[in-house]
Image (cartoon, rainbow, N blue to C red; front, side, top):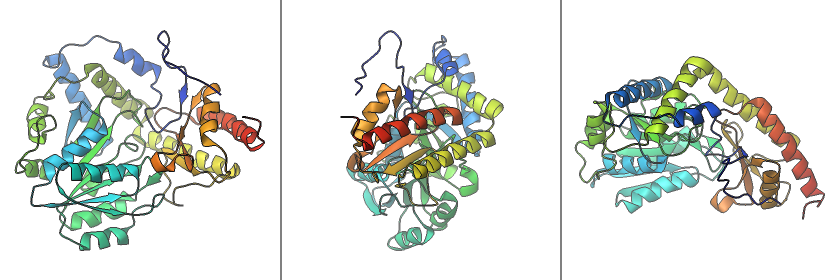
Length: 375
């Protein structure tokens, strides 16, 4: 069993195969160490502009893109506060823990919130979405593209147009898919596409980003009590000046600029999407060969995080701990799924070879657990 502690001298020595934060490549760590000017300087404004342009290409959008000093949860709350009026109704389509979280944010902010959910492990289907929308007149609809707790990817291409046809504003949390799975914001008509950077973008936590449509910005202007820190109207004003409203983590933004340049101009978007697809497929093949059943519905499995059932009836806590002794961190199931599932994150800069090496060690650990060789 392994007991890992804070390493003051060297930092973490683990290989991270978690659903986030993920391992940060050395070239990004070097970017973080570079000195910066202030957030009200011309050099910063030039860097900010590069990031916005890069995000627009990454998300296939002409919409404005904002940079937030928060996790994605902060922007989830921002969507609720900026886009739902006191006399309007919000619909939260949930397929797991983070869909539930968004609904709870709506409730805690006093919004008229309704949750329509499917069984965890399932995806949203067109008929389900149509039936949910027919139950009431919803002004804003919230959903995840990729549910990190269950390893399920929603068919956005099929369900977002249905929501748009209803006239509702559409907000999509793409935290564990942006830069790993193609999301064409303008083609689908997504009004807010948000994410944090510590997953497929392979950056340290501390930033969130979002594309915001003109429809969403216009609506925000007519919503009262938007708050201060996440006010879309104020963000838009400062974003036109290539700035943020308050002091951001400038080193992380420098790292984001470098990473977007790498993704767009070195690896290439299509190649990055293909690599993540290969990583997802390889993990599912391994799970099948190991006798593990996928928790996610067939045909809707995520290419960035795989969630497996405890079909072998082994102690997943021991398995995770034993993998630490081998230099890898994978994670147990999320919340109520603890010990019922475990998750492997295969996103960011992970290569097929690195995944193969980890899976080889994981196979050995599972075999030992099944033979009761690990106490």
